[in-house]
Amino acid sequence: MVNLIKGWKLNYLFLLLSLCLLSLTYGQDPNFHIYLAFGQSNMSGQADLVPADKTPDSRFVVLRAASHSGQTVGGFYPAVPPMGHSQSKMGIADFFGRKMTQELPASIKIGIANVAIGGQSIDLFDKATSPSYISKARNAKEWWIQYLDEYGGDPYKRIIQMGEIAKKEGVIKGILFHQGEADYQMTNWPNRVKKVYEDIIADLKLDPTKVPILIGELATTADGGDLGYRNGAVAEAANMIPNGHLISAAGCPALKETNYTLHFTRAGYQTFGERYAQKMIELLGSIGEPIVELTASPAEVSVGEQVKLKVSATTEKGNIVKLELKEGETLLEVASSASHTFILNNLSLGSHQITVIATDSQGNQGQASLKIQVNPIQTPYQGVAWAIPGKIEFEHYDECGNGCAYFDDSTGNKGGANFRMDEDVDIEECSDDGGGYNLGWVTAGEWVEYTVNVQNPGIYNMEIIAAAENANTISITSNGDELVKSVSIPSTGGWQIWQAVKVKDVKLKEGIQVLRFTIGSDYVNLNYFFFEPAFLAIQAKNQIQNNVGPQKRLFYDKEKQSIFVRIEENGKTRFIDVKGNQ
Image (tube, rainbow, N blue to C red; front, top):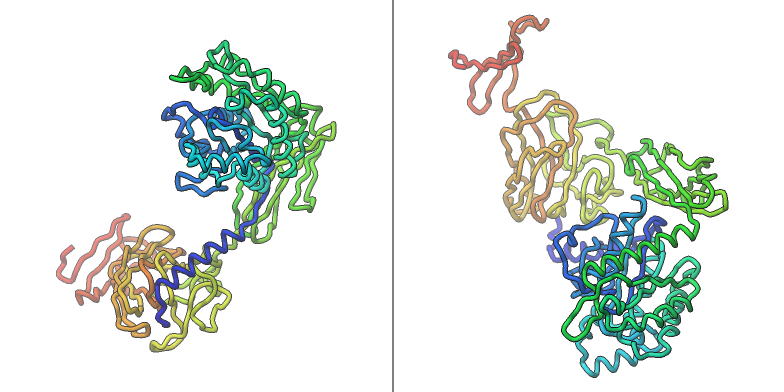
């Protein structure tokens, strides 16, 4: 075996993983509703957390817009605070998302990208004014620069970046906005808000009739807010935008702080955020799209297995008249009802993006999609399970591919042998007696599987023929149950200097089963393994063949070099040696 260095292998793995990540394709999910949120501290969130806030909801995620918490910008994570920058608490967006998941069907998932920094003007979010606004702030070393940098140094660009990701993964259903405290003296603030909204719609190529902006009032005077008198300007901004909607803050208690009263109490945030959600749910209904619930049972199958798709559609306008089942642009089946079960047979190997489109009596359409994964069937090499007792070559692993019959952390057969070259297991020519091939280049965590047929249950001795320049370990399971943990493989002095590693007293069950060999640390060469009974049975002359009376068999213990009798009677087994000892 070529003596590869560990560093090269790790670098190769890193490159492979990177390429895999870059090559990911997005599948838009119409039931994944994503909202872009931006503004000042009330959108960022100022309410202290309670333990329940850290409990994730599988249907509510954050599209991470700020760099913190060890999470990747642009990734989706459970929507627990902080959802904005690193010091965000509970706010409008948090309670909005929770209310949406409570009220919408279980098939709908909610995502929010939150770009908000306390105390900042609309100038920060206007792409025409933000460069100079940010430059002045950096020169003055303003306190909030750390949060600006978490958003990549340009909040507007970050909103657009998150919007592009949102369009690929789901559907942008709306924009959540709360800002204005910093601009209480800006006379043209409503026009500026309108411009930023129109810029977002244009840059993301969205349909403004389908993407409303929800604009929340400032804390009202009646509830203790210092700037409640500015809510006329907030209403003006909402009225100037055809699809703008004002969210009332009346009855949302303001939080009295030392120098000002601009934020809300926790109860105020909850009421306010839920009002955003109630308005959005109302708007979703007015848009007229039927809501489609689609489930697959099961969503992951093997080749040849059947999949049932259960569909249920509802609409607030008229009634559902048609359900269309599609894969890509191919129409598979049509049903003229609001609920139906489609049956998919003979799906080909791989991933299938299935969509159901519901049409109501007024021509409105809604859809839902899901992926069905069709996996290959794992079979023994050349179709027949290997008999135990017997010898099995390591290169005769099962057929099913990487991740199914084996796991190899690199692509292709690196061994150079002209054998199973379409697989990723690394195989080379072997110089051991008998020639053939051996496995090599194996690294920690890799595994191979073998379908075997154990002809008789009992205790077996095993030998693994291995070669290595460093000590290693191998663990073995049968159908997922541990057989042997961390068998020690010694250094044999060379990659083609072979040694039998003996493993005693391995207990095997009868019948067909899958053995998995998992590598403990990097690099060991593997030629073959075999099992033989720990005790050799000898047919006794007086064994009764018609199963009447006790069954008797003679056994020879190779280790102790002695003979004993095994008697099976009434479901119990006794062992008696030649001296009569039991």
